[in-house]
Length: 123
Image: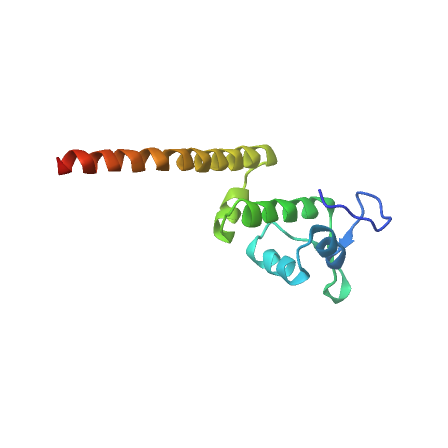
């Protein structure tokens, strides 16, 4: 969870600058994500000033995790987040991560089989 050291209560609304500082995600990226992820809709006040609710900040962190840590494309992250409750999304991410680990384990075995086939066919 983002660490806000602005003296506000945990449930307080945050400006885009405060969210950017706390999450390490630049404001222009947050604005772009608002266009790409329809479910990310911070409140807007006069002059177009954005105010992020705690659930908006959580969504920003989930998008960041999917895109920047798990390797999802924006399209893939959008699909992973669409109509998926938090617990299901976490299970999906765990499943994808597990599949990647399994794939990494399989590659050396496949290479060994390939080498054995080359030797057998050469004989």
